[in-house]
Image 1 (cartoon, rainbow, N blue to C red):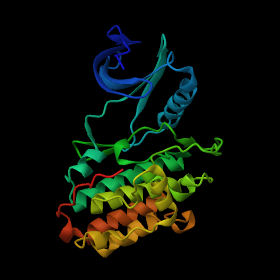
Image 2: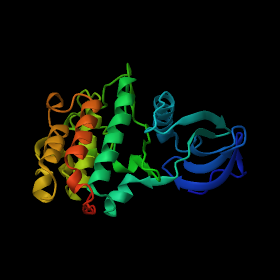
Image 3: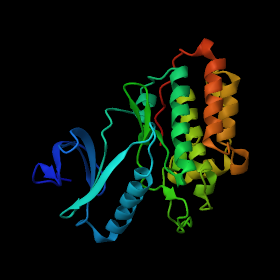
Image 4: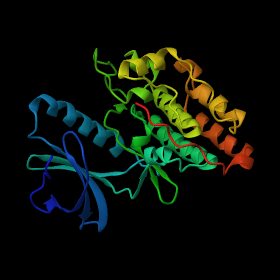
Length: 292
């Protein structure tokens, strides 16, 4: 996809560089002269395929409404939305950091840092949940880790707002299969506990270098999510303390009622684990084994 902007401005924003491209738009680094700050601009080209534009426009507006109403140090801040010609755009906090996915794949996390990052994600999710926003696509690619150690949850494009229609269209699977909860895979009603299941998957990957659910195709992954109970992390990485197994098992419970009931409880257990297991805080965790 060629760059969508012929000029160097989008509304009042001065385009500095391209950060990445998606299915329906481009993300830019830009400067806001009114507030004297660098921002990220996510765009969607409203002139593209009419068969898809309604879906992507809906996701775009959901993200603006969901994240735009949240103000938390672990959630990306949305500054502004607008339209310029055929482009709709969203100006948000510019994040100068790295995706958690990259840190996991490169094996750059130690035990203590992994617990701290997971606790921060839980706290950010808890804040969103308290305000009626369920993310529904929590995964390492949607988590940015800043240079100062803070995490930022991004991409609320398939979030569900409190009071929104929760029905799932038959055959439509939203989210990344390996991080979906059983109830999402089955198309059942989903609440905030789906985000905690996804966070349990992320914690498992950080601690073991492996996904708890893997397969050669989407269908086999979804089958495992519904039917497979993964091996405790401590079985794959004997250096891990037993408390990690307990936290992961509770987060990955098939039944939502057996799972953590709120993000605050999960964050509290993660921080307790950090305190009780300080003696192993600096041991290096394995790099992610690449799989589907």
